[in-house]
Length: 59
Image (tube, rainbow, N blue to C red; front, side, top):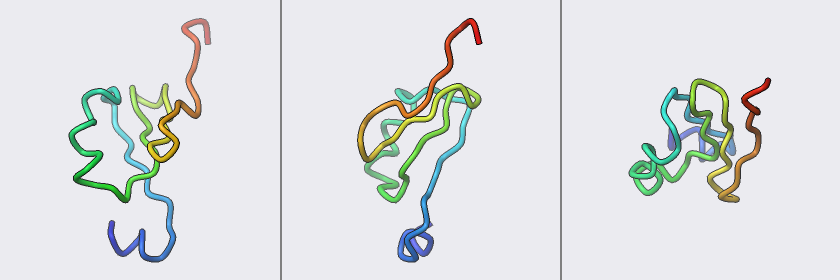
């Protein structure tokens, strides 16, 4: 992962878990830019600390 970051690659962690369960990894894996969480229902931008994309329950 570090080599990818050194080559300016975007690193994304894809998981079924929610962002709160992954907070412990924020400092451990600082190269991660985005989290795709909740089985793909949420894309979270760690660098900007905002939800980039989420889906309504009706979708």
